[in-house]
Length: 374
Ligand code: 13P
Ligand code: SF4
Image (cartoon, rainbow, N blue to C red; front, side, top):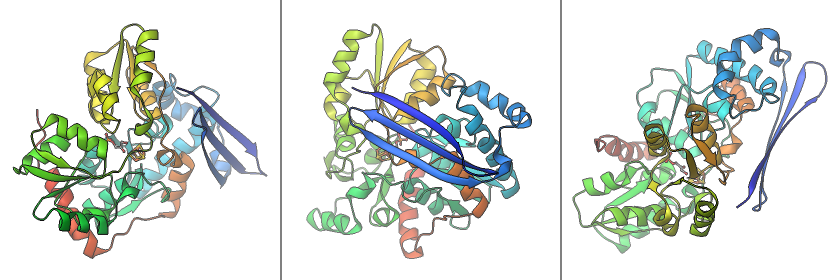
């Protein structure tokens, strides 16, 4: 598999203004994403005061963020953390966010399940969701009276895009009486059509909680087949796939095992079944973190989104992370500059039609009411 190039550049664009260019380029898939934003702001200079104020954060990040990059991140990190206090805001960040967001400005981090739970508990007036659109919608469903900001509303998800509300209605007509379980990686409009939601962290528990012999499980066909492998409940699936996880292969795992002694392979259940069969452990992003923190394996191949390895590497220095990884182009749309802009303007906000929000919220609340397995 390929390697990752990460470049960060800074160009002077007139007095008091800074242009940040962040680009990732991963071969051989030739993915390319460039986040570009103009910030007209002399307060965003890397002064000795900002260097001192942000140094404790940098100490946590220094294994994964090169020193040459920190002067570009630090003023944004500092400005965001100050503005959060003034706005009574919290930043919720998914495990796939870049380390400067995850460790630099996030108040709550975790997998989709943790973000949904914590979004329902926060007292803050403003929630900034550093993740993708369905996660921000879930936060809004749980907090209809709060301002929920999505720094880039184009941050979507190939799974959420694979299914519409009409598709769910057709499935119900085809399989009358069979309950529908939806992965949270779906739009609020799709959630409004289903009986209950699940995440990769609780999918088996949710399916079994229904006490029925057969369920419709959508939209991820690979997560559906993983659930079927763990449960006696018959699963009717939908042909959605995650564009990031579907690219991992069992051949890659074999080749890495041959080259790296004592390698522990950990895979997300959105990977194809042959990949899960070849892995040592399968779990949601939060379960991957727990596994590594508890077992402290010397060398890990984490078959998931790239930033996840960086974020865990910053917290567990004794584990070496063997790459490859795949970038999620949607997650990478979120940048520090966009988070700062969202906090300043209190835009873009997530709004959900109340006729959709009420049934969609019920599907999420039913999921949250299920007690996690110990
Ligand atoms: P988790 O629920 O494991 O955080 O996964 C969400 C996701 O989008 C994975 O691709
Ligand atoms: Fe969606 Fe896959 Fe990106 Fe997760 S990694 S947000 S499932 S496209």
